[in-house]
Length: 195
Ligand SMILES: [Fe+2]
Ligand SMILES: [Fe+2]
Image 1 (cartoon, rainbow, N blue to C red):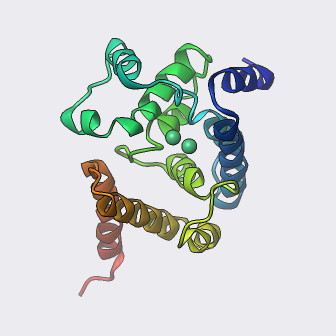
Image 2 (image 1 turned 180 degrees about the vertical axis):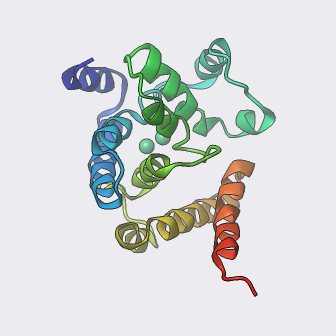
């Protein structure tokens, strides 16, 4: 598919505000990819398409994932607003013809961290939060500038911010989000000189 065709799909299926958000995520992801040594073309594609399945809701979404063999567990069923991410990866492959596994993985885990979060995964997840059109919330600017100086720290703060919001609103925190948040501390410990 060409860029024009991707854009055509998104504008036909997403609300204008959501489409603008996708462009913002793409813009931010490309900038971070150049800064941190990831592939800017992959960042562009994953950023643009990360919410391509956002129009799917309720039973349609669940059915779509079931048909594609996605292993829906109790956590998934309790946090359905995040399921457009794995659905988006299936859709990008099947309907939009994306074949790049790194791009598909980044789309699949942009809402809830997956296992083995790579550089591109972190860049897309973080760009989803800090993209330039996102409305101002406390702490956002700090994470925005951290993303340009310390990507791992910025991602950790983002996860903390997201979990704080979920706890405040009494919404389930997916265990993978908590695992990813804690991984930061384990990595820090592992880096400490021994003895
Ligand atoms: Fe999303
Ligand atoms: Fe998004």
